Length: 199
Image 1: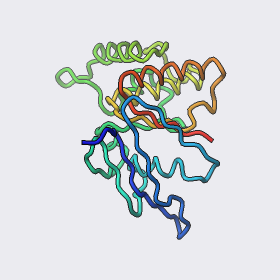
Image 2: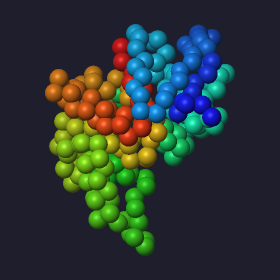
Image 3: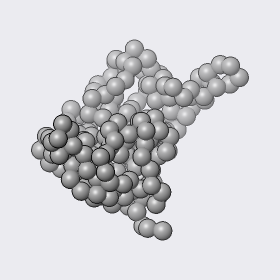
């Protein structure tokens, strides 16, 4: 058994004959942060979209905890411990913070949604990673930075082993960046592998 949580081996991807990824390799250990840096068009997001099941690589292999995988779509990735926080937030702004975190997987009590459990689970999740947001607030009332923290919390809520952060600081102030780094540090200590995309 290898020491690596995630291994990416010799991944290639081309669009209309233009090679975007050429024999890419990346190894990620539990509790480490890896930064993917480069100009726009360098292939950073393309590689992560192949990992996350948005694109299919032309060749090459992905291994999670030594098991080879190819996720068929983002939901498949999330259910197997790989989460991605995209630069463009895809949220339901008219709904509450809690609704956005558990959307599509609400806890049930009989035939009904268990609102109390959902709220309590959100409170505990926020405590675990140090997010200071009211779970009952509507998303439209919150700043972009707080909405981004909620997306990170949502990624963690899937018991993610690997979390990809795509340009997470692009809309944050200096204080908010510090807060983001605190959350990353906590996730590291919990054994999560972090891939941080930046140009």
